[in-house]
Amino acid sequence: MFSLRAVSKPSVGALKRAFSSDVKAEATALFDFHVERGGKIVNFGGFLLPVQYSDLSIVNSHLFTRKSASLFDVSHMLQTEIYGKDCVAYLESVCTADIQGLQDNGAVLTVFTNQQGGILDDLIITKIAEDHLYVVSNAARKHHDQQHLLKALDSHRKRNPSTDIKLRYYEPLERGLLALQGPRAAEALQNLTDVDLSQLYFMNSTTGNVAGVENCRITRCGYTGEDGFEIEVPASSAVKLAAELLTNENVKLAGLGARDSLRLEAGLCLYGNDITSETTPVEAALTWLVAKRRRELKDFPGAEAILRQIREGSSIKRVGLVSKTGPPARQGASIICVEDQEVGKVTSGCPSPSLGGNIAMGYVPTSYSKVGTRVGLKIRDRVYDAVVSKMPFVKANYYNRPK
Image 1 (tube, rainbow, N blue to C red):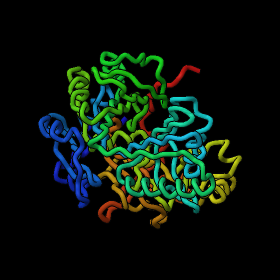
Image 2 (tube, rainbow, N blue to C red):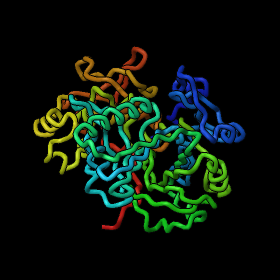
Image 3 (cartoon, helix red, strand yellow):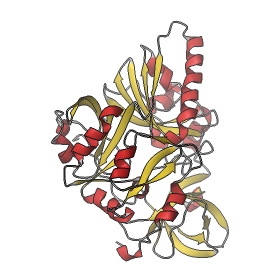
Image 4 (tube, rainbow, N blue to C red):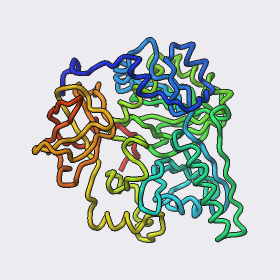
């Protein structure tokens, strides 16, 4: 491992600039709670959220998550419920997942794609039952996803005039969403719920009582690479639930800064940075999101382009990059080959608190994508040595069903 002393510590002002948006901002139900607890609030894509808290630096908050458990407010994510006897076929018409093949209360990560095979958003779909789906998608794509689903529903109704499908979008002040992440997350949550968490495996969901709040939906998933849960709760009870979780000394609040560095160490994509409508699942090293059954049916948007790339390969590929020297490479930094020619761009980058050096992701020609390939990262007119690395950078610790 690299020395932790190599980790740079950006100022709060720099972090606020990195996360802030000019979009008019909404508050979540936990806004006052964050402020009272020392949250440093930024406008993140139109939502007022903490980038960090006064009692922990981002680096220390990150490391606390890796060894214990942190609580994140992710109520800004778009929560959607879809009802109707043919809702599975409807939602499969816009994504690459095999929803039909899921067991009840099973969840899957998938993507919306366009006709060119580009990624319109990444999302998690939970199949509560054959006629009931629960979807969590990105806040930054909220309005796009709402219109995308409505347009698809119009098309579905034209093909199936008798359909009974209904959509319900939830606003942050209607429903809260809390993410409890880290190796002690299950222990902390088990003390407050009637659900047997030992029987709830990664990418599975259930409902139960949490801290006295009835009918919370608990999904074992997250965005950190650690074991953890996302807990859907009525917004009116979000503060109560968060406060109860924080009575455990092994749980602390964490903000956007730690969430970003944790997801990057886990090799997870951020929409708008690492995946966009211009990148396909194959180029993004997300081919596994295109389910076997859907490949055989060839019935998802962009199937022709994506399946061709699966057969023949893509010209570019998302890779991990590790650098032991210099400042961290941020989005837009040039990736340089040995001949000093630009071959790609960094899409995300940061200091790695767990490893002590700098990590990044970016796109390069497939010929430069082999692990161990040496490249350069051009940062402020200087080039620093880097090497293409396996992802995730830090081993994932998901709670999977025994084989």
